[in-house]
Length: 191
Length: 202
Image (cartoon, rainbow over all chains, first blue to last red; front, side, top):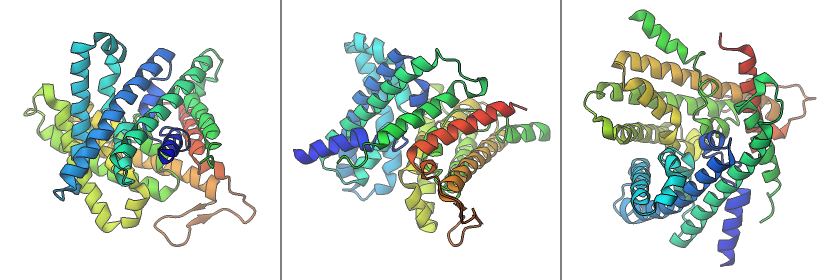
C-alpha cells in the first residue's frame, strides 16, 4: 500500500507528465487559454487515460507478450486508443449526454495526445503490475490535470497584461510553462 | 510543375517551418533537444516517417473511404514508425536508447498526421514527397538549432556522433545547467519563437 502511495506521489509531482516528461504539450498550450476548456480537457484525459492504460496493459501481457508479437506494440496501442476514444464518445453521447456536452469536443483530440500513448508505453517499460498500472495511469492523468489547470489560471491573468508584441501568445505561454516547470523541479528529492 | 515542386519543398524550410510557424508536435521538440545529436536523430526519424506516409497516403487517397480516413492514416503512419524503430534498434542502438519512448510516439506527432490530412490526402505523390521532405528537413533544422542553443549554454560543448566535441566554450565558461533541465526547454523554445516573430515571415 505504501509503495503504491509513493508511486502515485512521484507520478503526480516529481515525474509530472507535462512539465518533467514533456508529453501532451500540444493540448497543454492549445486548451489552456480559458479555465473551462482546461478543466474539460483535464477531465477527459483522466477518464480516457485510466481506461487506455488498463486495456493496453491487458493487450500487451495477454496478447503481444504471449504470442511474441512485441514489435506490433506501436500499431496495436494506437489502434486500441483510437477505437477506445471513439467508443467512449459514442457511449457518452447516448447514455450520459450531460457529460458528453462537457467533454464532447475534447475527446477526438485525445487520440493524438501523446500523454495517453506515452503513459501506456511507460507502464509497459517499467514492468508495472496491473494494480500499479491502474495507480500510475490515474496519477499521471491527475498530474496532467493539475499542471493544466494551474497553467490556465496563470494564462488567464497574462491575457490581461501588456505583453510585448513578439512575445505574445504561444511564446509567453512557453516561458510561463518554463517557470511552472521550475517550481515543479523543487519536488525532486521529496520521495 | 518544377516550380510548384520547389515551392512545396521550400515552404517547409521557412514559411511554414515546424514547430515555429506551425505550432505542432511540441513534445519531441522539448524532450529530445538536450543535445544537437539527439535533435538531428529525432528529426531524421520523423522525416523518414513523413516522406513515406505522405507518399503512401497520396497514392491511396482515392481508395480510402473518407469516413475512416483518420484510422487508415494512423495505421499507415504506425507501420512506418515501427520500421524506423526496428532499423534504429539494429543500427543506431545508443541513439535508440537516448530517444527512448519518443520514437514510438512519432505516431501521435501531430505534424505527421497534420500533413497527411492537410496535404497528402489532396495532392499527387510527387508533390506529397516534396512536402514531406520540406517539412521534415525544416523540423530537423529547428530541432538541431534548439539543441545547439541548449547544449552550448547548458554544457558548453557541441558533440555530434560521440568522440570529441567539435565545438567547446573557453575554460572560463560556467555551464548554465538550467538550460539542460526541463524548464530550460520551455524557456528556450519560447525565446526562439519570440525571435522568429521578430524576424517576421519574409
